[in-house]
Image 1 (cartoon, rainbow, N blue to C red):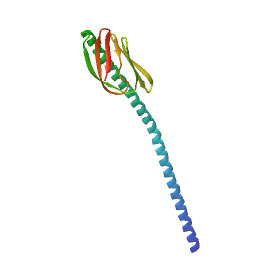
Image 2: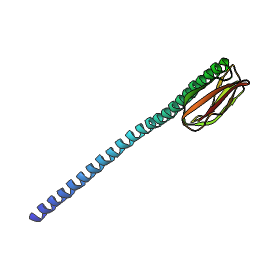
Image 3: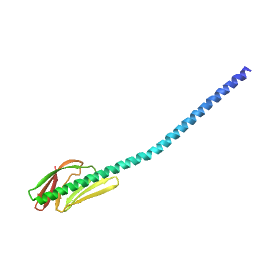
Image 4: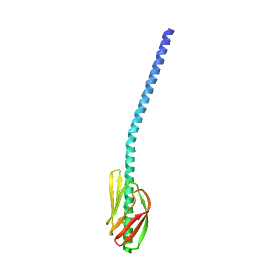
Length: 156
């Protein structure tokens, strides 16, 4: 009788171990499923954040260039109407992402590279303007000098 008792106890212990292992396996599987769902929910939020950040940066750069263009053109018109020996100096902060700057005729144009492609930001003047501006990001001194044929824009 003792042998069967020992066998029954051994079977019960083995059965308990299997039950605990199955229960632990089930808990682990449920935990993995939960982590998977949380990960699937977070990934789109991260992508939306990155996209929004890039678009915001491009909009800020475009607004800065538009403001800078109007500031330069306004100063160029003032200097031109004051006469030939007149000149003024502006401090200009150039944002990153500029591919080209074109100053010719009555137009000051910045070509800006964004995540969506290339944007042209043009500012028009009532006077003839010419010269160069940097394409590298940074802070520069822009010198605007009146001449008989228009206004010359340089930087240093």
